[in-house]
Image 1 (cartoon, helix red, strand yellow):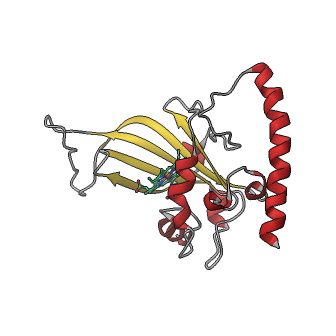
Image 2: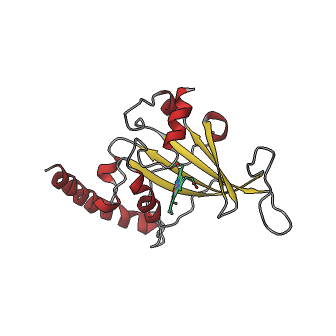
Length: 190
Ligand code: HEC
């Protein structure tokens, strides 16, 4: 029953979306390979958010800095999904490389970020977003929505389906669609 009513809401939202889209189209046609998102990049995340993890990606030769808003961190509760209003920002950094192209590791065994950001990715959850986004149930990430940004912080208008598909199986073990949820919970205890 719940699934059916949600489906109806989605259909309603779709109809509303079509009207909205044609109005928007009159001003600036959105590229067909762009996914709409309500997620914006918080301007002050680098100073106002808590950095809770740095992930080295050997395969991509980058380091990813993970930040969460402090209001959400303060309200993380064991056994519950992350709070409404959680915003997670992931900054992708280039790292120092040897001449051969292999990343150099510091004394701590970690990559050495150069300070240059290549791109930024954000996920944010807001009550009701799950009911009004237009993704089919098989890509439904609850109330989370995703967005991609360029190095300068301007929106990167790409298709976001892959974000939803790849994060979907993380809806388990209290991770609430995140990969780094365990680290986030650790940070909340500090
Ligand atoms: C192929 C799988 C995959 C896709 C596609 C993907 N992600 Fe992720 N995402 C990950 C993994 C894995 C991590 C954990 C960091 C790491 O290991 O690189 C992550 C971490 C994140 C985080 C930090 C919070 C967390 O989940 O740990 C954010 C924010 C994020 N991704 C946003 C996005 C956005 C936005 C997109 C689409 C533009 C996207 N992701 C697409 C796999 C994916």
